[in-house]
Amino acid sequence: VVSGFARFANDDMALARYDGTGALDTNFGGTGIVTLPVGGGPDAANAVAVQADKKILVAGSARSGNDDNVAIVRWLIDDC
Image (cartoon, rainbow, N blue to C red):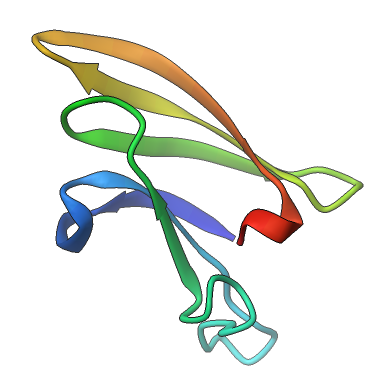
């Protein structure tokens, strides 16, 4: 699982999951990529960890107006 932001989705937080061959895992969000708008402006997922229960914890930033805020998001398996 890698984290970042998606230009194609208004700079929303983005995660991509790859399988053992290095190809996108289409079981993850249907395409291998999931996005999430967190603030009203550009967001970025800067760090990611997969917990023992397979939930995904993401830390990053979310812009709201002129303010950059810290954002912590936890994705559940069923959300992807």
